[in-house]
Length: 240
Image: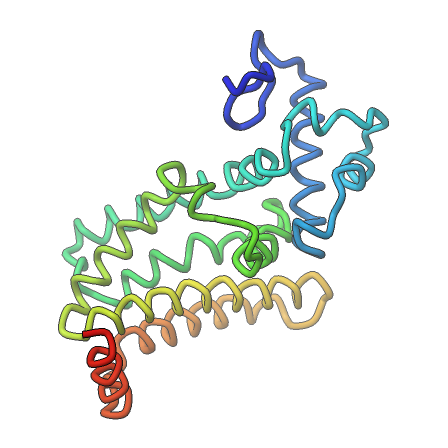
C-alpha cells in the first residue's frame, strides 16, 4: 500500500473492482497511451486524459491511479508484460535449438516481440510511439518503471550479446547495445506513425521488420575501425 488505499500500481484496494470500474481503468490507460504517444507525457494534462476516456468525473484518473507515474506504469504493464513473456519464450526456443551464440537469433528475440505490436491492429496503434516518447523524455526513467517487472527477457538478451561480442572492447559493446535498443524503438515508432496515417503498404511491414533485424545484427557485430580504437585508447589514457 502507498497510504492512499491503492497498491503500488495505483489500483484501488479493499475489494474486487466492479466491471464498470475495470472498464473505466482500461479506457483511461488506452486514452493516456494514445495522447502520450502523440504529444509526450509532460504535454498532456490529466484532465485531457479523463476527457479522452469519456469520463465526466474529473477525479476518475486520480482515483484509479493516483499519479502520472502510476498511470505510465499501467501502460507498461498492459503492453510489456506480454512482450516480456514473448521474448522469454523465444529465448527458450533459441536455447533448445542451440542458437545462444547466434547474433541474428538474439536480435530477432529483441525486436520481434515489440514489432508484433505493429502487425496486430487489435493491440492498438500507439504503444511503440508512446515508448519512443518515454525513451526521449529526460524526466521519464523507464528503467525505474520496468526493472524487475517486465525486463527479464531484455536483460537476458543483453547478457547474451555481451557474451557473443566479448572480443570487442567492453565500452564499444555497451554503446552498441544502447544504440541497438534506441534504433529498434525509434525505427518501429516511425513505422507505426506511417501506418497510422496510411503512408506505406501493409505488405511492406514484414520486409521492414526483417531488414531492421538484419541491420541491427550487422551493426552489433561490425568490426571496430582503427579510428574508433584510437579514440577509445585516447579516452583510456585521459581517465587513467
